[in-house]
Length: 157
Image 1 (cartoon, one colour):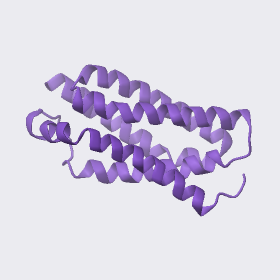
Image 2: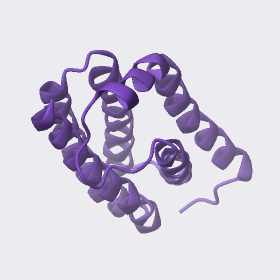
Image 3: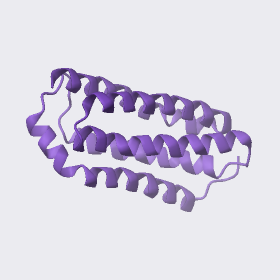
Image 4: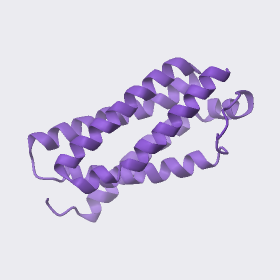
């Protein structure tokens, strides 16, 4: 594994946080309506929890991305990089599907696909840099919880 510089870590953390911030910005009005008008399942955390958790998860994603993108070139690294971009794309659009479109059933299917992509990304990351893979376990757990919440919202509304 090549040494990853602090500039690389900073770049990838800022990039992933920016993706999350853009999704949050694009869904801000719909999220306000959601928080007041939608019936939520048991165990739904208060709204303030979501931006805090996502900020941490995007930072971990950025650290992992820096380690993967700066790794020695290989077919495994190429696969890991592709899966990173694909899951990030699915991650970004889930918020729009769920909050803006309120297509809760489709959002659940989209989230299930995201979950699979995260698992595949973790496995691909592990082949390149095991620590990068382990840093994504909280993300997988949170998306699993988000699946419960999404399914609950779909069933209740």
